[in-house]
Image (cartoon, rainbow, N blue to C red; front, side):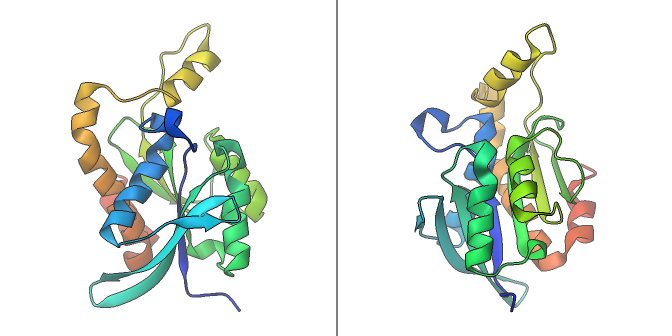
Length: 199
């Protein structure tokens, strides 16, 4: 029987050297949610830092797990699938938060399924879950300059930090990402898309 828990997974790369980089937007949003709902993380099978808590919004209470995979980005699916299987959480109760280079910094798009947009974390989760039918909160980070070294530029870009202007805006942006994840759970996809996708 499927559990009524939700699983929110923020994607990133573990380790000091990746802290605060664009590719770790998911981790940063997860940290905001952890603070909001008093989630204490513990190790899940060496695959993820995992915590559980309850959210209360509009008089409703929802139980959820919050995960930060310890696998590198391109193996994120191992962590997400392991937690989902262990706690019997169906894909329609999974929300994944990740950086997205197709969106300008500060923009958020919410969707279920569809293209991976070339994101290795999402490719890995699609593979491991055997379906793309889970919710995604796409956090815009903008993209590197196109050019002859496009691949290297992209790698350096997603593993790079934020400039001073963006750093100022970051707390609000991360709070919006956390709101979007909560809204998917409490208000459903369509309402959440209405609120965030058009901004």
